[in-house]
Length: 407
Image (cartoon, one colour):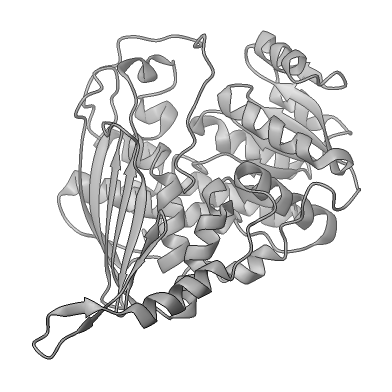
């Protein structure tokens, strides 16, 4: 594959369970909304390897409520992220803030010598991604961008099968990042605006599947795309997009992002020379009869299934798996499965989709620094406002969220 140089086997060696190492890493969590609870629960699986020392939210009562809910008696609560980061007890900062705040807080943390786990998307622009990467390079601190779906046994097995070449080279990939959100989803104050959220479903939901596609296939040569807002009248941004990616190998990939699909049936299907393999897992192989029509190639299916089943289940999955990988990197120097460069690549493909959809023409990669879609100041005026945002709330009473299909 042309994706991240760390294959499935290499990644597995850095995924320790919660009973592994014992060095304590102090953690600060910035932002205490729904996704922060996922981070807190994941960190708490690692016992003495880490401890949450600080919580921060512009609504400090939310930070105090989370500390009480999760029994974080030793954690201090702050309204100013600088105070949370500057604590001498803090070594690692989890950033669970709106995308517009990612660059400012990540750069501050990295320049303070703190490691960073940055929720997706990495930032709203490539310019900000590059500024974060530069800060990480100057500090030498570890930077990982959340891509929790890489840390699923199903995805490791699929990546291993594709790497094995048993199915042959990839000819066509179909990636359906199907989600569903009600009208009130965009009532939260920062959602549904290009300036604060950075984009719609392509950036904030399909980001998971964009990352996985890049991990499996690498960066495409070009993309064409279309986007629209089909059913969310309180959002400037898109709730649907579809893109066609072209690769130098001749392969084609189709990527659809949606917030209007009931059932949220996300899938990734790879049609290869010898077989079809997919998430959720399915293998099907055909061989030609004399007249070219297909018959079932049971022998190839058996080989591929054996390769799939040969990969042991990961000891920890999702955010817990990624946090375990990051703690390993901090405490032992082992490699990160998802680093800052991977986060930037994901954003570059998404920016390419936005550019192609807005221009109606093909976007060629890489996106150069003089391209209007490299920085927010030149990109934002070009993006359509599908609707005017007219409703806004500071918080929702419920914190239930869905993180996507696991298998």
